[in-house]
Structures are given as C-alpha cells and as structure tokens.
Image 1 (cartoon, rainbow, N blue to C red):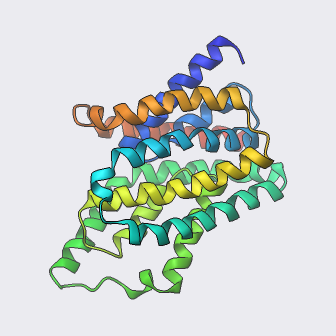
Image 2 (image 1 turned 120 degrees about the horizontal axis):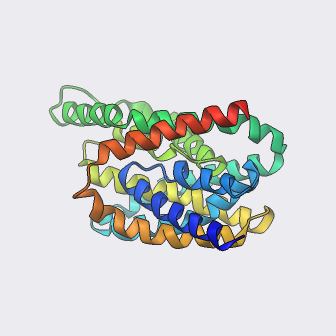
Length: 259
C-alpha cells in the first residue's frame, strides 16, 4: 500500500465515521475506497468489517447517556444480533467469492436506497410512537414474538455478511416495539448492530484474508470521524450530504453491476 493509498483510506475512514453519525451507513464510504485501491469485493468486505469495529466503539461511548438503564434490553438484542453476525460471517466464508461479487451491487443499492428513504422511515416510526403513546394504536405483538426475534437475527445476518443499511432496518424494527424518544432507540440500535459487526470481525480476523494495513488506516480515520461526527452534525446541513452519499451509492451499485 502506497502513502497516497494510506492517506486516501484515512480520509475515507474519516468520512465513514462522519457518515455513520449523519446517516448510519459508514460502509457506503469505506467499502468503495477499499475497492479503489485494488482489493477484490470479498477482500474489501472483510477488511471493511474489521476496520469499522473502531466506529462501533466510538458510537457506544458517544451514547452513554441514552444507554443508561438499557442493559436488560440490550443483552437480548446483542445476543440476537451477535448470533446473526456469526451466521452472516459463516455464510460469507463458506460461499464462493463469485456469489458475493454477484450479490454485492444489490446490497450497495439497498443501503443507498435506505439512506435516501431515511427521513420517511424516521417519520413513519415517529408516527407509530406517537399513536402508541396516545393509545390510538397498539404496537404489534409480532415484534416481541418469536417472529420479531427471528427478524432481528436476520438483520444481524445481513450485518455480518455485508452490513450497509442494517442499522436503518433495525431502527425500523425497534420503532415498532416502543414509544421512547428517538435518541434512545438510535443508541440501542447502534450497540445492537455493532455486536453483529464485532462478532463477524472476529471471525474474519481468524479465518479470512484481512488486509491489515488498509484496515488500520481506515480505523484511524474512523475513530476521528466518529468522534467529530456528533459535533459537526449540529452545525452542518445534513440532507445534502446524505443525498450525495446515497446517489454515489447507487452509482457505485450500477458500476459494480456492469463491471
């Protein structure tokens, strides 16, 4: 890895950390950067998963206030997402690389579309919480039944396998369960999806071809970005950045599909 590539990855890690704070889709910035320096899709994916562990730690530390009193709930969500993350990692490691290469454009497109639809998803979840708080609508029992638990495991599988957009999916699922403030739901979501990422990252460290110098460069930028993100979001316009990243994600998906 050249010095220029290392600098590119540090900047990409910084952008991934910021994007995670703004929109919850770090991989739409960090994953393309790894492709750009010449890693194969599978190699880039496992390296990206390992590098984003740094972002997970930053997100948890930055949300300590919102996470107070949530441990009983979190331990079950972490267990479910951790199980899903392990299954997702096993799925990636046991399937042919050509299969992942064929699927990844659609996964990138899904992540980009979820990013572009985030406001609609957020408004929908807020309406559900307000209706439940007023007693006008009951939160569906399916979200706390075995089917609801299975759905969280499936989100963890996606997080362990690829991950871009898993946070937004889980946020929508959790919004069906509670009428709590959005900040608390978002913090719980961050920890739960981070569990899937960490479990998958451990598996990749032991069993997959992680590119360590790129992973370290990305993680370095990611730590800085995840620390700066909450502060910059207070003063910078969020929507233009989010739409630009979403459009770039769709463009990347099209490029990977035809390439």
